[in-house]
Image 1 (cartoon, rainbow, N blue to C red):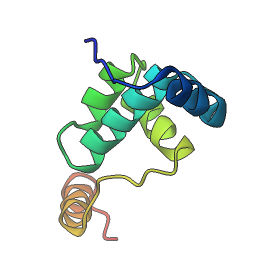
Image 2: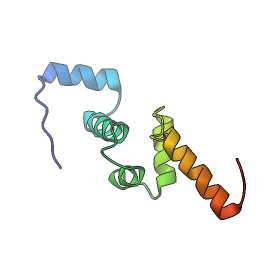
Image 3: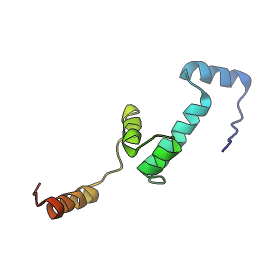
Image 4: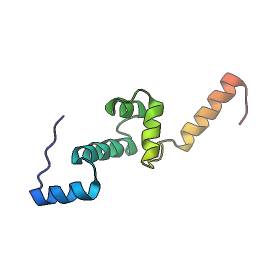
Length: 91
């Protein structure tokens, strides 16, 4: 996908200098982070979009950027039920 952002030459130069990385990378990361935070993409979809080998690598990518997991109390309780049912362990 190709996206155009209309900036003057001086604005682009200032942003490049301030951010220290390519604007394309910043925009891509921002889009993916926002999409993950809002539940529009899953962890697996995030990994695929970033061309990471596993969801675990995507977890690390999020952690490196201090982005919390999309994991709520209902999911935690469901995981606890699964552990009890499959392993017979009470948490």
